[in-house]
Image 1 (tube, rainbow, N blue to C red):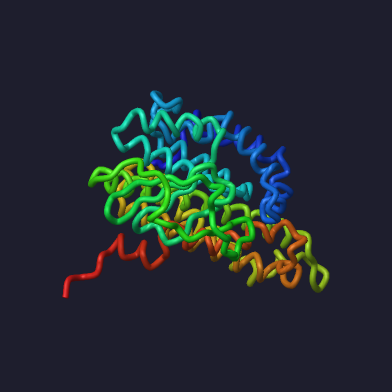
Image 2 (cartoon, rainbow, N blue to C red):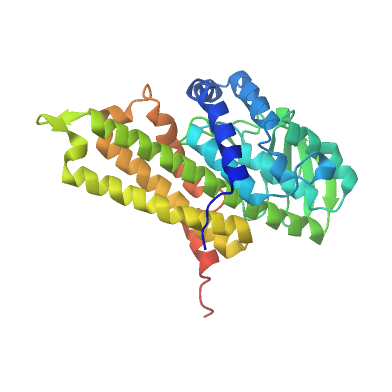
Length: 330
């Protein structure tokens, strides 16, 4: 079986890559980290107009239908460019609201999410204690273990908690605040689906981050010289780069397979592989770049500091392994 994007999916990726490549994303990321969301919001609107969030919603809610492969292709480009903001969480919130079976509730929120008019962040059982970028989001959705779905305006977010990645602002999720939108077992079922989508899309982001780290490291290895020759000519460096390349290449078909099946175990395998490959790419980038790799002035730092948080977001390696191979009963 060939896990290759179709021509339409590839064209979608090229469109997003061209838009992001012309948008000076590093400058928007640095502004986002400093608390200035304006450049990121402007780029967010252009990406939404290009259809970034359309595959996360049905046509009845101004989407293109639930298309996980297309959305994974898009999120890989988001990761490749280092785009800041709750992109995965907004898409997962649209999926959650669309799966509740309440058309009026979905129409209240989803069209604005698809159009890029509003950002959302999300916390569901099993997805961690923190919400991403609650200060920038228009809506904060929480699902409690009891099956209560609540929404709170983003402006009401509490103090942010620093992350390794300065563009990721975390806030503790509060399950006892906000407007009650729905309650019941169907809410928990929809939350599980949304969490699976969030894990899949984070895996796609990891894949894009890892590929950018590798590309920039290879280019640097061609330029930096030691003992009169590029360091990329040394066998030890070649081996390290080759190992990083293979890890990313082996992770990619797992990602597309998971997007096709949406099976929780396959999604966990994809997240584990892509997350570990991206983190390994970050370690390789640091080793090859040397001391300059630790400087914040170098754009490389924007991707270096994403690798580990994304590796743990929406499923740590241990949690993903437990999903792929549950522990044997005692």
